[in-house]
Length: 591
Ligand SMILES: [Cu+2]
Image 1 (cartoon, helix red, strand yellow):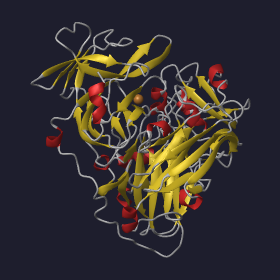
Image 2 (image 1 turned 120 degrees about the vertical axis):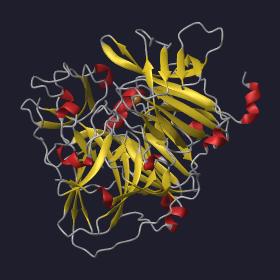
Image 3 (image 1 turned 90 degrees about the vertical axis):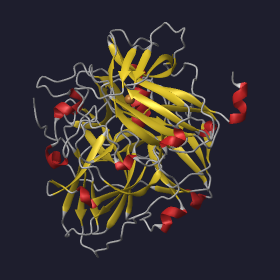
Image 4 (image 1 turned 180 degrees about the vertical axis):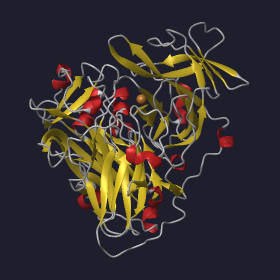
């Protein structure tokens, strides 16, 4: 097994780009964004890549809005030509020297997928984290074709937060986003201004992190061609090159001051565990996390000792203090998370040596920082941040409706696994078919699978302004970041489970499993909740051998929404389901 791979690109060669800002208030809240094919250079030493981008750029412009000031966007689909991504499944999972083929560029013996090559630009835009009326939420089947516009109205009646907008087409979101269809969206409000946090350049810097792979020419040189490569054993694309704001392994020159980084993991599938290194040693004390998916935490949080974990679509609002560093200091941000991610720990002390192709982490670099000479400024970090939400009180949720969702992977011969979410309903006395039992030590509850596939009838009808508890039970070997559209939620618990699934226990619709809320003897995860997860979230990691409970209350809009795994290869392969929020007065008419 090869322990390191020579990087075919020079790290820290390109300056970190900052995406163009599109401030809604400067345009009276009325924006017009073309969705276009374009060309983009991912690294100084790479040829230009063909991309699809909002305004033809990767990432798209960062839209900035103000709480309470609605924004209307005319999304103009001007895509022409074919998908600018070669999609392939490699012939084998590892090359002759044992290196996983996903760690290297090129097609690795795969042939270009002709169905993907024929995709010609149907799109739909979802504002992730937005409290958006259902008609404008970007339902995955409501597409607009090249030449058509969609005028979406975003009320912005929500707290300050970093959101993002991206393509959400049924079955092929993984290709549209990979082609470049993603951008950031920042909502600001008065509470943040009262705290005196950095706002705008140069001290507030968005970081959209993702991974990409490229083609090779006949001489073995990198082309700029975007390549979405999977292999016979791994259905997710884990690309070797980390891209921040559109550049591979960029560097940011910083002043000796406090910076605010608005971080999004915009990868299709890769989870990052970010560690800041100074002189090869972890320097996590320099980072304070002040916000998560839906904005400010109640109090600043330290980064977990192993590093800051961000799965696909998770966000972090970070303050990083460069003030104590002499000019010329160089720091690097690295990733220590294996792919696929299963929650397995990796000590920050070994982060400088995290490279391991066998874990599909050939190059841990994310980006670099260089401290420039300048006046030293040391603004204080506020001790109290948000005051507009409280941790959920379990007592208050005792009578709340419970919804149970099992995450399952059904392995199929000769094609990628199907990942589904089985919505479980209490099995009646007369139920004789396949059942799921959940034992908490005292009580046994029997369930039947009420829904499996996206197109199955909706079974979740949450009533507006009513608390609910959703239980997410992971019966697979990987961590799944589960995203619920519309209102944010809070995590209640993360509990170890053990389970047994008999042979053929997972079929097309039914599920047979015996689940016990108790630690599996072979389970090495600690199942703790990080401090930074105790905020308002819209995407939560559910690790293997784990049940996560979340408290959710839909308060804004009635309509048809979705929840899904945010690993795009999973979402596209059926790990997505609808739910319908209902006003209470309509419920008597629903049966
Ligand atoms: Cu998943």
